[in-house]
Image (cartoon, rainbow, N blue to C red; front, side):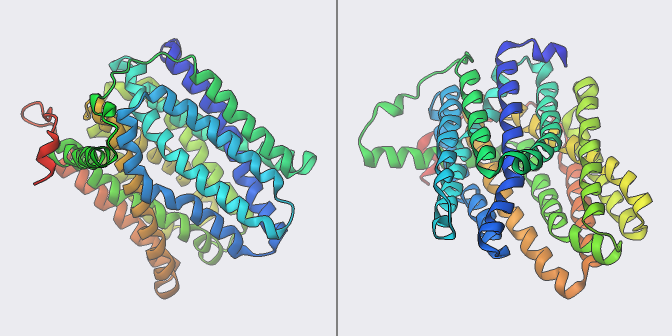
Length: 417
């Protein structure tokens, strides 16, 4: 942990993101309460989450193209600045008639955010040594788990003590703080010569070809293609679990909101433990070997939960599940970074964002419809099946190639055929 934080660029990124994510989780808790208090409508709150997630499906892959064309440092700086300034517009919302402004801010913030994630994921391998890549990704997952716990608590306390608008201002301030730290990062950047062609028709054609080339890199790199297949199956399970867990706790476990909160806390504790373990030992095992075992563990834990739905058993199981989930995520991100050449990382992680959004929508819709017809217990079993399917795909296809599979950079004209 200490060694990776001694690398100046990563330290600046990590500290800035740690503070910024605390603000994000504060607002994540406060905003739904504010919308509900303003409108009295659960649908109004749900619409906000739908609007915020829609750009991931539409813009993420395209954003990855520009991340590979632009200076990644300034993509992150400008993204944080814009998101912080956009948040301040919410201060003008004082009545239900102005609710549209919250939706507009959520949409604009999400669109801008699609540039930040692939830029960050693509930049991390430039900030740390190859041996510290697992530790760096583990530190990011660790900070996500910590900030989720801290942000929810602080959000509730600050909203009660100072009000919703104070939470908005503080979250905007965390974005500006992160942008300030990111401005001091030094990253190598090689300008794309195609950017100097300012003929709009040619630019659109070039961007389209670069987008297709990004897809081609995923398709032609065996471990990368296998990683995307495994990720798709696992995200289906994850997204279904988000929808079906609440009715499962209420109807099968006969629990309440306190039990549900305890389950999420247990998952967070497991994530913290896994992050620390991966920092210490993750670099000693190839990510492709970790992924299928972590997913096999998750599938098994889901079936144990279904068969023994008592809180005294489920809560310890959820700690272990949190460890498995974070371990799988860290290993997957590291493997994708390792298998992608630097000039394509933005597009690959942009494509990953689109895939995640698509699979999440499919999984949530399937869980919602299936939960009413088949019941929460059967849908929990489907969650386990998808984790096991992802694990099986990992064991079958996440194998070391007989020869190094460094894919040649596709030529623009190759994607026209």
